[in-house]
Image 1 (cartoon, rainbow, N blue to C red):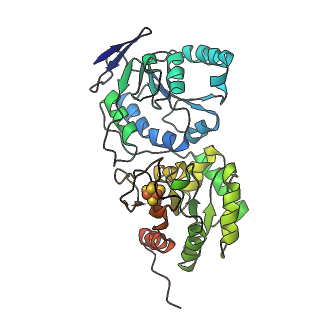
Image 2: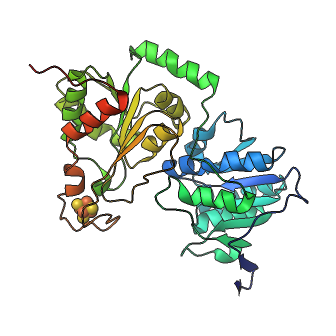
Length: 362
Ligand code: SF4
């Protein structure tokens, strides 16, 4: 199917595989500007692209701190950080265009599907392949690909995209932790007295219906403590500090609160050193999966991934009749889907995942 626009011709080609013949060492730009969890999931493209074109120059463009998540990843030749305000200033956009065009990319893979990411991909030039979406700016792309794949598969849309363009199967998301980061986090842990075997808790996300019930977290920490699992460490961004302080204050056993104290670039190393990650449907939980740490993901209002991970992953999701409601909860703030995942159930799941015996009866 072809649709015409005044600016270009957009080709929808579900069987698109970019030819190797004219691109032994292609220069590839991946545009995924923001959203931590999605950048983590989009990392599932890298192995397939690298296997298909071992001599490629692969660059990744992301906004500000988000780029840090891929810092030191040997599969990425170049990390391009776009200032957060780049899209608000014509002069900054023009500067970015000049910088990107100078790199002479052959292919630009736009895996966000927003107008802003399409605009940036267009500025970069090259053959532009992007996600089909309802957002404006489709005319800025050369090829549009459906968000395909099996929705139950983790990171399905990115794996599907990578398979379409490379012709190779793309594996689950994977973040590489460099030695320097690993050592820096180990040193910081020593400073803070955080022992081996710590459990990373990731309670924070954007939409209220994706949160686990706040009172559940202190009870979970208590149960893990009683089972000899821990210490527990809270992770989150600076905006989560207030909620983290409430959780810490309500927790009757030791809980270390690192909310707002870790940079994006350090997070993979932190979660790679954890014994277990427990979190909601949020970027940090996805990082836990991508660094292959055993992970429990608590889902309620969003569609869970149930397969495709290669590391120990337990997705807890009760599939209530109203779920997944995504952005339109109908439960008037009760969030039964998350309330039903009780601390007892999650603690039992944690013990089972780690092979820890239940605590002795008092
Ligand atoms: S409507 Fe159902 S799925 Fe959505 S938040 Fe409420 S209980 Fe959860």
